[in-house]
Amino acid sequence: MFVLVLLGACAKPITHTEIRFAIAQAPLTLDPRYATDAASERVNRLLYRPLVDFDAHSRAVPALARWQQTDALHYRFTLGKNGRRFHDDEQLTANDVAATYRSLLALKDSPHSAEFANIASVETQDTNTVEFTLRQSDKQFPARLIIGILPAKLIAQNHDFAKQPIGSGAFKLVEWKRTLKLARVADQQQIIMEEVRDPTVRVLKLLRGEVDLLQGDLPPELVAYLKQQKYIHVLESFGSNYSYLGFNLQDPQLKNPLIRQAVALSINRDVIIKHALVGGSRPATAILPPEHWAGNSDLQPIHYDPQRAKVLLQQAGVTLPLKLIYKTSTDAQRVRLATIMQAQMRPSGIDLEIRSLDWGTFFEDIKQGHFQLYGLTWVGIKTPEIYRLAFHSASVPPKGANRGHVQDAELDALIDRADWPAVTARIHAQLPVVPLWYEGQFAAMRSTLSGYKPAADGNWDSLESVINKGDK
Image (tube, rainbow, N blue to C red):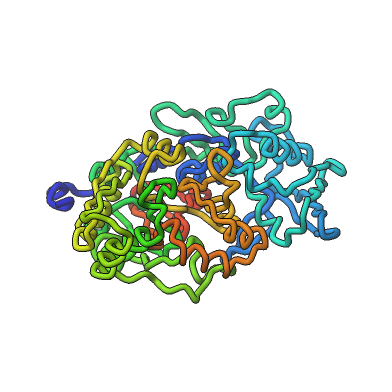
């Protein structure tokens, strides 16, 4: 269907100095203290620098600062030399670090605040040194400090970072109107990010030379079509972003674990991965993949079994068919996946109604708990603290991302003890969400670009190194 629309369209050699990046969804905020959607997280990585980042094995490594644990409750961070110039030309100091994390502790509406509740105080020792005092010992504490650092002076002035970001990242904001225009600090190379929600239109824009780069959010047949085009390069990679189906556990039916298990058994992941996802995709069992240092390789994938699902629904006292409402965005690929799952669920006795909403409305409904079922993808997750953010009873929005209102005292205790194998096993058994797949990654670009590689978590960090070399 998609390819027929594109017949006759061919890539044309067009030269321009800026790099135009077509994205499926624009960011919602450029304030890292509030960002939870994928686009916002990815752009903020470009605009701001955190104290800590991660290596290829998702272990914490120094970014702005190195650290030492002086005793069970104290961590001392010492700023290095790199990345310490804000975009307004002010120097980044320990005072800015302290102000950023103090603001997170004070904010009542930040979805990240609950992650830092264990911080008792943040004190500067000198211009380069800041010390965190904890309420309880936490060996993984450095891995939590991945929020981009903001200027203390502007925090005090209640500056609108959401629309006017000032960080010390590799890119600075030029303007944000219809498109988001960034400039690379090192060489002033401009990147223009344009929201193009329709995947076919994104591909057509790439072929016509109206954009130079796409990443992710295309059905596999469009990716295959792009591979055949003369002036287009397609790169694929293994994926680690976790797609899932979320339940509202306050719903009278979905609070029953038998019904949640039946829904999980009614989805044929293998068929969807083979026919509707790009290369590098694979079945998921938990947010963090099994190769992650905190992953759980003992968890078994949930296999398609519609007959067993129907039996469980009958055991739960459900009058078939069970009618459920599934919310998703208007992105064509997301609607397509929802339609496939809708068809797969019918033999199990589940009548799934799909409601596709524009991204802003959809995501606000999910945060507010206005749903029965929804589909989303966690992107760029590196630390097992995601389990606290997504499933701890203290992390219900706006204090976190426990959107399904999970209330499980046993799970809370396991999370508090940081017993990650037990945490993942408990989630797998109780199914507050249904694990679906880790999505493969790809980037499609015009042959005028070089130096860009898609990351396993879908980040846009390669924009720091991409070059527009012009047509030969």
